[in-house]
Image (tube, rainbow, N blue to C red; front, side, top):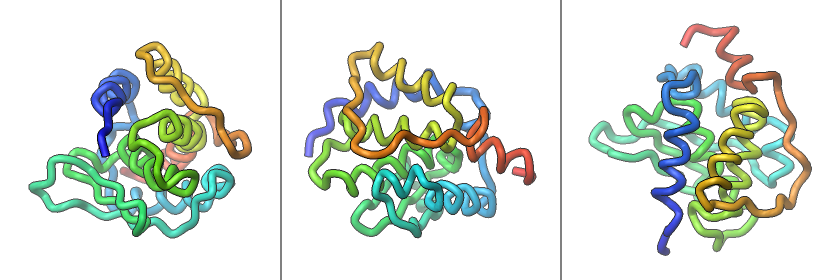
Length: 166
């Protein structure tokens, strides 16, 4: 399937997440705790997601992270083992619960991504992401699920980050 919005989404993400705490490398233990917190959260359940989602490191020569929605599995490339990439890939998995045929980086995926970012990264970060998408001609879709629940100014990741060493 063609993915005409892919590069524009990547560019928008780089401007929002670049050089922020959401791009800090995470240990496997912290990554596992973050995946569990997100996939157990009412926002994930409201979108239609089911747990568990398996997350593991990709082969070291892999250039990109990948979501395998049909298997509820994510592989994170070297350099992609961070909160921003995790939420991006979880959005791919969750989008498939809404519409199996949805475009990979289309409006529905962007909406799921922003809503997961509210919970995982906080409302301010998610708002920056939504505004960046909109300002670059990448509209969001109407959500088909309850409003996402915010978990503090830095989201679930911020709360987890304050409790453990990365």
